[in-house]
Image (cartoon, rainbow, N blue to C red; front, side, top):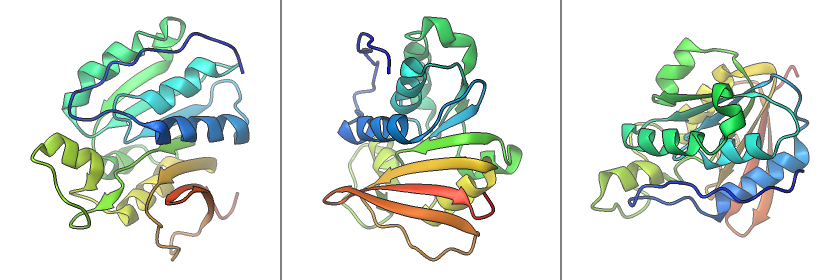
Length: 197
């Protein structure tokens, strides 16, 4: 990994990225073999920290899509994209819900990284701020919907990494290989691949 200056990310006041995002970046850097021109998706990207960190420190160039549901993040995504001056043409911002996007872009990505909302609706106290609630809770979707979308978006030979504080349902009707890695108390990384890969 290259030694570079830390990036100073632009973030909204209603939600800040935390150590979990950086934990996922470090895990993926250590365990995924990057190669030239792969397609990477940072799903539920927020201000784009996970995908941008992976691209910033990678030894190869790759295409990065930052997918975020909330339009309020677009200004921060655009600002943070500019931090990677040499890779701006490799970065695309998609403001869309993952369920609808998976209908349009099936089997598109070699690598998907995701730090999704941690709580199903009704499992935690809601904030007065709707944007913060969307960051922290599945309001319109569920973990099952997320896994279905990842299954559709992931190439047959691709790999997805999800960091979460929830234990995902291990039932697997989508013919996926799912491996759970416990990082620390109440923090897990799930590695997802198609069973045929």
